[in-house]
Image (tube, rainbow, N blue to C red; front, side, top):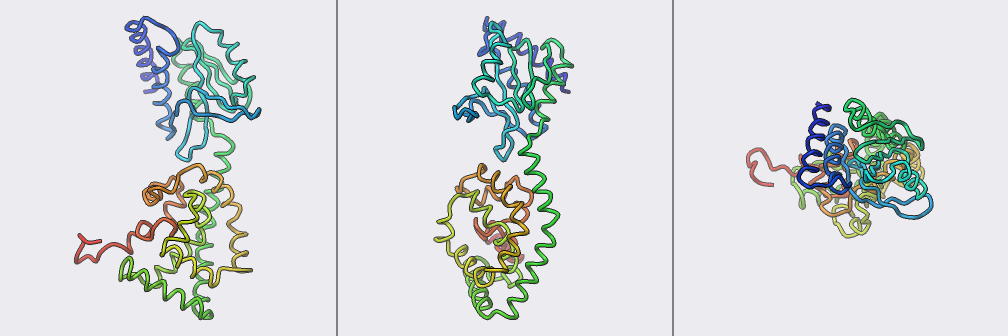
Length: 319
């Protein structure tokens, strides 16, 4: 299939030259971009044109396109040059300007040169479809260190999450037995949820909201970048009040120490994902496996707990 895509690319270039009468970079670049986008699809990556990149010299450059994932993390870069230029000179010039060489593909529609980890990895002739296929596969398969670190953190968080949830459930049950202030705040919150969301919400639902709020609040504040939401949204504000009746001091520190290594890494990536607009939609489609399956109360209780807001089976049309 990949070789077929390359043959389609050859055909497209021939037509562009035949119809347009030019071999200039701007005339035929779109064909190679389309080819790369097809390779990106299997990796769930997207080639985004003309994004700014801050160099180590604190200057700004714009590769022709940046390879991005759903978390807006950079996987690679593409720079297309004119066939009438010296490709090697152009490469040297770009590197001297601070273009990233972690994973960057230079090409002039005749020769493709792939740099990875700061050094030239391979160069191939465009007329060699097998070699071109191998190069493109290497380009889209490269996984940056930041991505590896993030994925490792997510996997470790997923492994540790069940025990954390059990610990928090036990903690909340203990508070229910020993902490009158907690009980009053929890019961008030339960009534608020029944009045505002669904009369069928029970204490077990509130317990899960508390757990999810504790584990994901910092991440969602980072994603939505809107702390004021917590102060003005009634549900979020009252939920925080319940948490604050027990999740303080040594109790809080004990949990935070266990999740902080993951949270730091996840927040670093999360800060680039979304703004707070249409937050419920973003959460439902969140690329974080942990967050999409274990959402926070920050967005809306309705989006977070569809089972709680679903109407009774006797009247499925109402919400």
